[in-house]
Length: 120
Image (cartoon, helix red, strand yellow):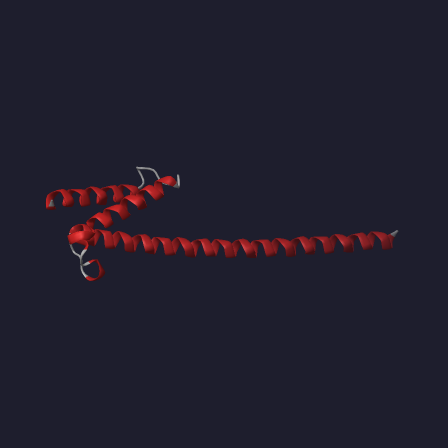
């Protein structure tokens, strides 16, 4: 009877070690997923910031470098890209018209439309 009780205790200890090991693996996997998500968010923030900076330069007329012809003929392409970007974000359902990124895209769209109407 004592031997059976000792075996049950050993079995319980093994079960607990197995559960702890399984939990540790789960935590490790979830930690890696969180790290991947954090890296993706940082990458997207940097990309958004770069796009914002580029669009700000184009909208204000400071077109140096690869955007050199943006004011002459590329405003329509730029306007199309802004509208597509805004519409894509809105279709995700994550953003609405009150969100900063959508408001900023709307503002840039209005600026480009105003520049198009004054240059025509």
